[in-house]
Image (cartoon, rainbow, N blue to C red; front, side):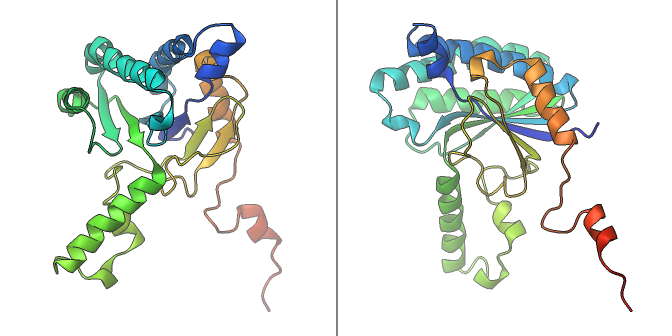
Length: 244
């Protein structure tokens, strides 16, 4: 079975999971953290080298202050409680997203996680935090425009490859597979550049219920897809009339 090296997940449905059980939204987010732990442990066993998770979008700041505070607390708890295990398991942590404006304690934890695990190789866990795909593209365009204005680069020399090399995901391959839970059928501003040719799998389960078997199911569906990247598949080529 063909296994994607890089899988990205939109972890959706924590609040609805909690509501369906008559519980506060925080309970759903806590259950979601546990589902993340299980997924990180399962990924290397299933042949995945890069796992990107949408932890907190740049639009999530518009949620009620109490919920945002709860989410920040869970992030701190996850890093403090799980960082040692991640490091011991050989997991490298990368953070993507805009760090400008984040509180110093949050930035410090993110930097500590990256620094401690920088040389690990069993799995790269990419956490999209304060991340938005459009924001990432705009920040990259500004960076390149400033460099061109200073005469450091020729604007005409900018290519898709050089642009990608300035994104938050520099050095990380594009995801072959993007999974979204909760039954919603959209990307929600997640990896808009990188997911240009990703296969998309939408699962009806809420994120707290996501299991190793759900991940394996998505991988099986991916294996059955024919990836064309804008070209023709083998069957299409075979059906074309011969020249002459």
